[in-house]
Structures are given as structure tokens and as C-alpha cells.
Length: 179
Image (cartoon, rainbow, N blue to C red):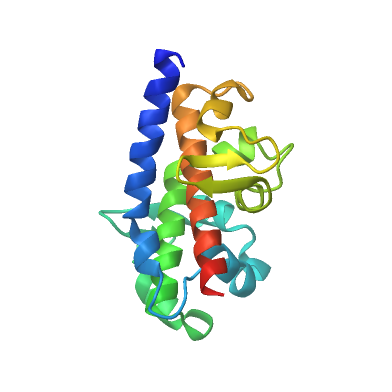
């Protein structure tokens, strides 16, 4: 293993630990984990399109809050009354997803979508979460190492993609475990 690979692996392990302690865990209530993509697809997609594109077009990050670009107002108040409202667990899950989508930007859509439909589908169908991180379901390859050589990603982009895919896989597995 090269020094660069060892450093990337260390960064990925640290990122994984941070994500495990993230609001994704808070989104899981005592009864079930809320999958923000499934929620958005079921309740919002018909009018608002893909969640990531919606977030980047209509929302922005304020001081630790997701705000609407049109009004500058907090999204929480709006979501409590829009189309019947959402529960606190659903709101936490949606906020976490929107914050991540805004932070990651359109990286996946611009660089990966030509071959992979969505980050969530890629994580769901082609990746497995193990004690050693994400691995390819069919190849058995460590994703942190694979992403260094896949496409033309720089180190920062590979780290962002790994974090994005790890988060998606984590939510998928939590929701499957609850279901």
C-alpha cells in the first residue's frame, strides 16, 4: 500500500466514524429509520424533481440551518405545514440529506451519472458496508482505493464520493434492518 493509499484509507475511516455519529442516527426514531430519499420520492418528487437538484436550486445553508432561497426563511417552519407536514424524525432526515446534498454539490450528477443512475442506487445495488468500509458487491474491491483510480477524480473528489456513498449505504442498511 502506498503512502497516498494509506492516507486516503485513514481519512475514510475517520469520515466513517464521523458519519456514524452524524444526524443520520438522530433521524432514526425508536421505531424506524427514515430514509430521506424514499420520503422525498414518495412525497415531494412529483412536484419538485430529484432531491439533490431541488436542494441546490431552491435551498442554501445558513448558520447550521437549511433556508429557502426565495424567502430566506427557515425550512423547518415551512415543512411543518407544507402538504400535510412532516414528523420531527422526517424533518431531521430531510435536513441531513439537504445539508449533505448542498455540501457535496453536483459532483455525482456531473461526473458519475452518465454510467450510474444515482448515488443512492449505486450504493444500494453495487456496494456493501463492512467493518472495513465500503466494498464492491461483485468485485470485492475497497471503494476508497477504487475511487482513487476510477474516472479522473482528485483526492478531494474521491473522498467526497466515498462519503456520499457511505452515507447512502448506511441509511439503506438501517432502513432494511428496521423493516
